Image 1 (cartoon, rainbow, N blue to C red):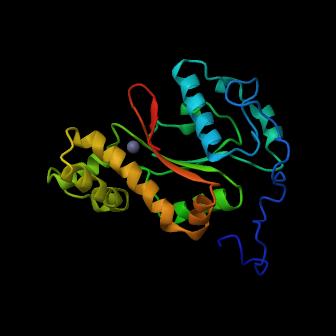
Image 2: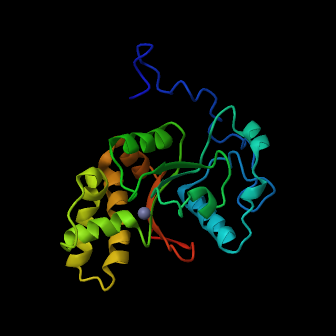
Length: 240
Ligand SMILES: [Zn+2]
């Protein structure tokens, strides 16, 4: 593991997280998505309860009831000892898709991995494993979005409308299989279908990519859910 080595390794817990709340213990603070506080731990949640919290947060964002404007530096006091996020969100780097806003969650709530096209490389995977194995996150959401430029670039390459820019190869190449699969299905809207297929494929890969994730899934401690955000409305649709 990447945090081992400097002191000879050996510890199961990474040194930067020395004070995690005890399993089953009281939450360190926070009142859910519509309470007066929006930062800090919400306590130990089942995967389905964590998903419900994201759904509720997205509804608050959509209805204009999001209150992240109330989150300020004073909230840091609620998370300075440790973090206990209830969800990992693998999201696109697109400036219109910030998970904290879309799900109305303040400090300490979401563990976010963002890269254009919401794909996962080895570093991203290690980050996800860290959040699940050591921070005990019960939920991983792979969040694509309609109108994704990275997916559009992959689609343009597949359709022969553009050459693959070598500088963007690491971003575009992992998405191409999703476009091919969506096209093979005869999708009416290849752009939207490719976005959904990409999120589904990344989620599926995560299910088998690392033993720690597979074990948590098998034990019912984890769900991995693909999702797509509508770029126009902000609504997030979950698939699973
Ligand atoms: Zn995107």
